[in-house]
Every structure is written in C-alpha cells, then in structure tokens.
Image (cartoon, helix red, strand yellow):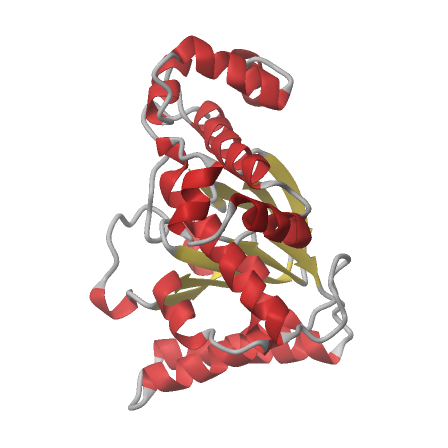
Length: 298
C-alpha cells in the first residue's frame, strides 16, 4: 500500500521517539510486537538503528526495500539503518527482535574480529541457520540472556548486555556466508574497510547534495584514483556506481512506499529538473519511474 507522505521513520514500530531507558538497545519477542499488529508490520525504516531478527521457529515474509524474502526459522535477518522493511509473520512464530543504536554498536565494535559483523550494518542479510549445530544453539542462548538482562535489570546491566552483545556479534560473524573470506583479516584490510565505511557514510549523508567523486575524495583527504581503487577492491564497484546505487535505492523506496508524485520525489532527491530525474532513473534502472511504481504496486 502506498503511503500519502514520506516513508515513516520510527524508533520501533510506530513509536516516533525512544524512551530514555531504551535509547541504546531494545529487545522483545516476535510475538510481543506482532500480536499488537495482527502479525503484520507495515513498511517503515529506522534512522541510526540496526535491527536483528532471530527467527527460532516459524516463518516471516520480509519486504526489504523493494525485494521480498521468505525467511524460515531458524534464521537471522539483519536490517541496517535507513533500510525500508516490513514483516508478515506466520501466527505463532517464535524468536526475538533486537534493536541496537548505531552509536552503541560503534562504542563496543572496536576489534578486528568484530569487523566480520560490520557487513550486517550496511547490507540487509538473511542468514539461514542449521538447527542441529552448536553455533545455532549458542546464538539462541546468547539472545535469551540479553533478553533476560533487559527485562530484569540489575546493577551492571549495561555492561553485561554490552558483553553479551559482543559475544553475539562474534557468533554471527562466524556463520558461514557464500561470499565470506575464510582468511584472517589483515591490519591493512581492516584499515581499508574503515576508510570504505567512512565513504559509505559520507554518501548516505550527502548523496542528495549530488557531491562529485572529487569532492568525496577531497573530504576524505585522498585522490580520486585511490578512492576508486579502494572501492573496486572491496565491493568491485566504482565510487560513482556506489553513489548512483544509493540514489536509486532511495528513489525506489519513495516510488514503492509513498504516493508522492515523481516530480516531488525528484526534488526530494536534490534534482532541480524532474524531467532530468526521470531520464536518470530510466538510464540506471532500465525502466521509467512511473512504470517501476506501477509494477511494484500492482
């Protein structure tokens, strides 16, 4: 269903501002929240918050940006900040939803080992788990411990939750991934990942201003050539492609989840000429913006 206004930004599902005690982290069972919404969460997004959904038993149909994913438990679904997502759960689905502030993650994510988990903070992922393996049991146990500490606060609560969240990050980082590099990350690679994440963060903040690659490179104190080499090494994309992809993702989100006219979306994305935006979208996607909306909302 298209929304009349811009895509809503929530702390949780429908709560527009965090309660003070929950500012750094929140955890609840899938049933707790979904029963309030008849097992269906409408598309929305969170600013500066990462969500990890642990499906222990059952099934969730996830709409993530403009893609639909079928998730059968046990599985982990990660939703990075700003990514539009909605869930339709099978009644009775068991598991937990963990919502973590980016600032809190940054505070505790300062080791090379945990950099394996950094990918979850930038790209939505669905990780299927083998119910018979030790790592799946360990992940379930860790999440239940975080939930217990959250619900029954005692002295040292934040420190203990931080410690268990560190454990969870490492456990998820150990899960097999088709594109996973099994070799140990070198110090040089770790530094390069840090620079690349800085670039991605700058793109998130300035893509609507239509910064040139040169301006990004200058802001980061490096040459265009070095930035290009770095991006191609890590994700096999040029800086320009990364910038265009970020713009198109936002355009698709607005076309799919709002009823704003194409011209308004163009202005929202920093285009001075809606006709130029239409040509830009068609060139990048291969179809007209209006056609994309029609196909997605049929």
